[in-house]
Image (cartoon, rainbow, N blue to C red; front, side, top):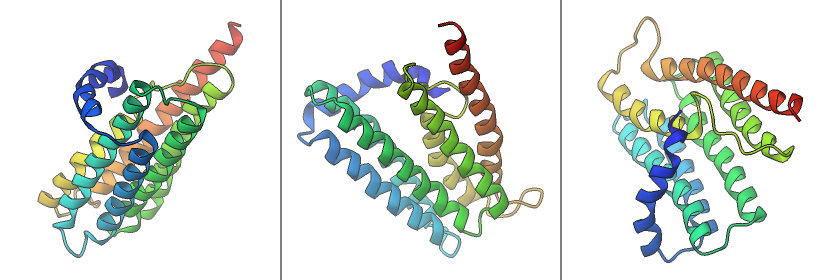
Length: 201
């Protein structure tokens, strides 16, 4: 849903991209490092709630570097298939580290968490597979990566202040339940968008 603002965000990133003298792939790996640490802090945050803030901050850093690497690649004329592969692969690793960190913590009911991370990965798979078969890269749906990063940035902060269960679940479990439902809706939308394209060829 937030991916519709990609062009606007691209303009905001321009001043940062012009000042940062680092390679796009290096920034991609920095985004992976921040995702890994975010997942670690998420996992241990039940014992020390202050780690929720560190996890939230690192999720924001992950999203920033993820957005910036592509911008720098385009500005430097370094955008190629190898960089695109690295970017998408690292994004999936990052999703697993961040979401997995919360799922493995006591904040999240494991059954719901498994459905959530499966839905997230399938959403992303359909987006890139559409491009692989000749259609464009699909970002549509209510659970694109920009939506996930935004929600994952905000939700640990809310979890810190609402540390009791709501109707039997912690707040982070409700977030994973949302990821499950919104993910399934997005999967169906992307699937039929590509099928419709095939039928119109």
